[in-house]
Length: 474
Image (cartoon, rainbow, N blue to C red; front, side):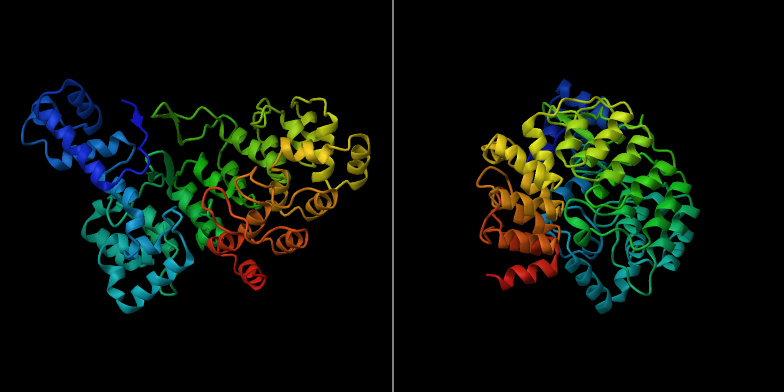
């Protein structure tokens, strides 16, 4: 039976109502309900489902699995996360919600200082604080705890050790992970975020993500912990770890996974939505990463992916070839490298040559093309309004300086979800922020989704230096 996508904005009350409805349908002998129970509960048959043996908890488990969660508690945690914020384990770990903040870990440390017993109340708390001795004690008493789910997130102890960012002097989550692995913990332990995305122990070790490395930092012993997991048999095809670390320049995660066997045949192991159902993802991991690298100026990463067998037959995601994307990104050497390794080439027209000149900060070529076609700036911003936003977020100072000199709009009007200043602020590019403001960018411009200002974006990303500068300019 296919997994269904969790409906947007469903509350816990909604989910309980769905579970109650399933139970009522079973009591009435509904054939479709019985089919789902057999497929998703595993240990419940027709007779049990129609009897009092099919409990409320049984119905909740089936509903959780309908939407891709391992347990009801994991579904409950996902749909109620915004109402939480007071549980010690929740504050100590990366949860991969927009609420991830350094302040959460600070609050958890304060809670632990006030009540040291928080770290020894169960194996999951001990894993969070890095109390290896307590973890061993729990396992000596009950070896089955090594892979038992529990705690706030209903995770295995290893996941708490890998996702914890408490980092207290008296503890070591790395030491906890070692003890757990020695006792037979599954190095491929994972949970499904939103029922769709596979977050493994290895994903937790590498950290990072869409909220940026300040809010979602890597584990303090990232490399050693990642090798411990990989040496124990963790699957190097960890597409979520690669996704989370693709936003910043270092290639350490990719390099290590390639070293341990990641290759061009591996596919992304998160699920895709099709007509309300979640299905297997057909896209190859290295190809996905290559498209991102080419379009986001990670030139060395693109070369590394090409050298290790990334599929060069894919397009850049906008109908253009990878060759064209590299040229338009201002990377002619990368475009040539792609061509030399068999990627399709394409004729680059005047408009694309102008984009390439802007992104490559080639003022001579850009002005020459403008002499021939005076409306190129207007056309370029109409056809590719993200261009200056992309350059600002990627901290391409020379490119943005040239575009501003040529007359590009520093705010992009209403044609992009965010303005260049939002992206520069979020990524902590202080010199870019100054350049944009000097070029006329508005401090009060708001993004289309959150209606936030660049200052608010800097605050959210934990970019203290940019935050202070923008606050001083108000």
